[in-house]
Image (cartoon, rainbow, N blue to C red; front, side, top):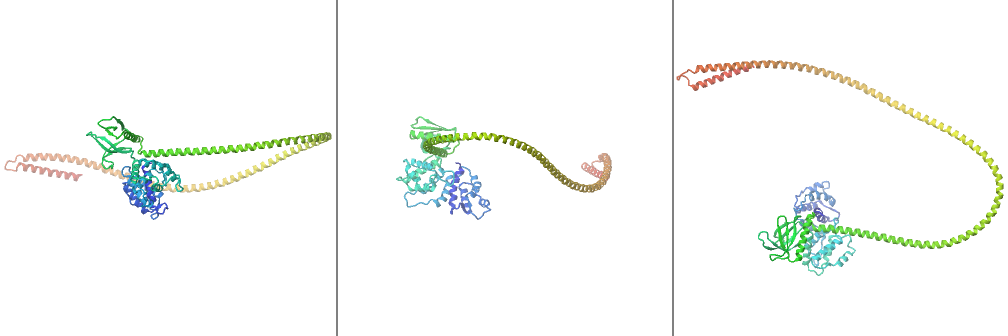
Length: 584
């Protein structure tokens, strides 16, 4: 049973509790509140408009459980992450909804189960109930749960009370609901004479063992890892880990040992003043512990080995595995019971068949005796009839002999007449054959004539259809010829336009080529002028430098001479470039 199935069992109670009219439908406003509370306890984000969007075609009407399931799966259960929430909070929410409507007890009675114990029994019922709705628990599982509770209270289970309860007319043998189960627990028949606190402790212990997956709990002495001193700790063993606390209230967790396939448990000899020792080995550490007695050590080592085995087999809960095994055993027992009933029915049928055949055999024997008597009487009567017949035959034989003689003479005459009749019949048969042949020829000729007429009519119809098709093809051909001529004329005009455009483009291309040739010649001339101008600039720069160098100290300073020379060079270059630009 996976997490989704466990959650659906609790949610089913919450949904049915909101169905006040027992119509199988719940209003959307109530479903909004239920969905919001479920998202809160499951620690998932809640979309307040998802429900209205999911049922937007029916905004005012109530929603059935089948209609709510797609929303529940998509927006809530598919987002659930195992380990991110406390399942007991979900159970408490659904219990609160359903207990207000269904769990009504007499507060003045001294046998009333307290609210907390009723909640735990409700959770145990959901865990052990069958995976089908409405939820029921079969008698075997009820007996198993009551035996566990009685074992926790160290009392003997009273099977007679349970048999009397299931023998009542109001209790179905296929299973009971949780409210019937709680009513039975409130009756006090199973816990008669036991203090309420003991019953509460037993229910809590069974609840932690089955629902909380606690394989074993108790005090053990543990040796420290650093200081190597011994301290008494409260240990809680689950299929995945072994936790230890300072006390049995489990408020101060001192450590958590993760169990896997690499762990093993070994019994140790007594030492350090400790007895009944054993150790739990993991890949990283070895934990030494001491039990109170040999029995406790054996129980702890067996429980730890069971937890390691469950982890290796990929199982998360011992009692889920035990529940599946009990269910398989019940199914096998039911199959064996069914096969036994079928065998008994077959044996009864065979016995009835045997008795019937024996009765038939007696009737046959009696009928045989009566038949024997009748046979003797018939034999005697046949003898008498035979003697009478023999005498009558002798008389008839004589008469027949006389008749034979007369018959022989008559037979000769009959033979002659028969011969004449045979000849006449033979002639008639030959005539009939000739008539049949003529008739067959006439029928064949008529059939041939009819076939020829049908063939001729078909040919005429086919010829008419082909003439129509030919006329249609001729009309289409004439239309196509006219269309082709029009298209040909249009293509001819288009070709003439394109030809003129091509000639114009060629003419423009030749003009562009001629212009490009002239521009190339102008560029060559400009380059030649540029080289000549560059040569002239260099020449005049040399002349200017030569003319300006002899000026003495009373003349222009050398730095000013350089600036003037640079100014002249720049002006001259600007003039040359302007002339080149004009030429280009």
